[in-house]
Amino acid sequence: MKNKIIMFWTIVILTIISIVVIKVKPIPLGLDLVGGSRIVLEAQTTGNIAKITQDMMDGLKSALENRVNALGVSETMVQQMGEKRLLIEIPNVSDPKLAREFLGETAELEFKKPIINEDGDAIGWEASGLSGEDLNKAAVGTDTSGRWMITLDFNAKGAAKFEKLTREFKGYPIAIYFNGDSISEPVVQQEISGGKAQITGDFTIEQAKKIVNLLNAGALPVPAKIIEENTVGPTLGADSLEKSKIAGIIGLGAVMLFMLFWYRVPGFIANIALVIYSLIVFAIFKLVPVTLTLAGIAGFILSIGMAVDANILIFERTKEELKAGRTLFTAINSGFDRAFTSIFDSNMSTIITCAILYFLGSNIVKGFALTLAIGVIVSMFSAITVTKNFMHLMFGTGQLKHPALFGLREEDINEAYEVAETKREKAKFGVLD
Image (cartoon, rainbow, N blue to C red):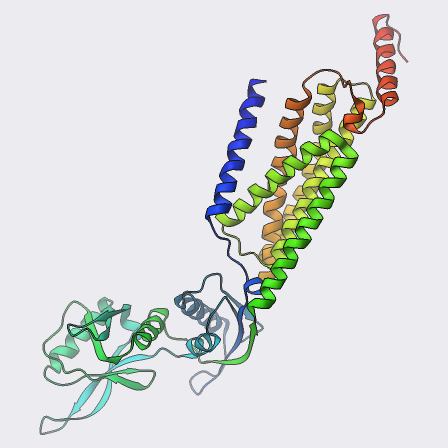
């Protein structure tokens, strides 16, 4: 009994923690629920690139993921479609036009050295070998007059190039080009070592941030063109979310009413376990975190059905044991033990299927598989541990005095006990049926 009390309070504490997590942590919502932009980009061949390879696509995907993250939008998705297309989904984006322009930029930063004539005048520009590839990080800052500027931190190779460039062209301007346009032509005042530089100009904060974000995200390894763009409105997403909530409440309510009607007190215990199960699963969703989509909600609701199915197997087995004349304590234990194999086998089959869907399916399918797998794993805990613990605490170890509490008739139990007693009497005298 002591172990059962400990387990009971463990379940209570776990439930309280789950409620706190649900209240404190927000859950990320997918594009279909919160709205946003869906963009398809296609890698382009050029004079220097005759064929798009998988390595190029992997590099393009990585660069675009960095850029989308630089937008400050969470739970984005970049997925390859076919040989040279990428699908990008950006939930809750406030400016689809900004996202479109941001993803299409090439982010080419180049420092150009001056061409000096015989009179010592700068008459043009030529490449100096120093580019965005030599950067560690870019950031937005302000100069002494409060104007916005861009600070650059070069890597070791870039720092050496920059030091050499400033040493050779001290007193001359160096042109800084971004995506083919000159954004600044500062005059070198002194040799600069350490790999630190500043770009000053008439920048607005938005322009400076955009340049910094693109530089930090890196240049695209191949040119990419936006060939399709769709916008999912937040109204549609909110409507889908509301309908999903209503469907979930109706479905859960119907299941709980059925359990209460058919299994009586055990059904009531199963409903409590189902509420605890839902709280724990939802808390796990927030802790992982799981991006909740319509497919993910479907997986969660399906896992609720499987949790109820486990309880039904247990209760039916328990009723069979009671009809066979077992004591209440023995019937409960035997019912759980006999049902466990079926529950374990069916749940493991589901988890294996979820693993296959997660690793081989699309992102939408992955969301369904992940929520279903988490729900199934937790359902085994709720059915085997929570329900069993509450059953023992409520019914104790004696005989079943009120069969109606289990949805049984008096004659079912009386007949079972009479048969069991007859068998015990015969056993005393060595009589075997």
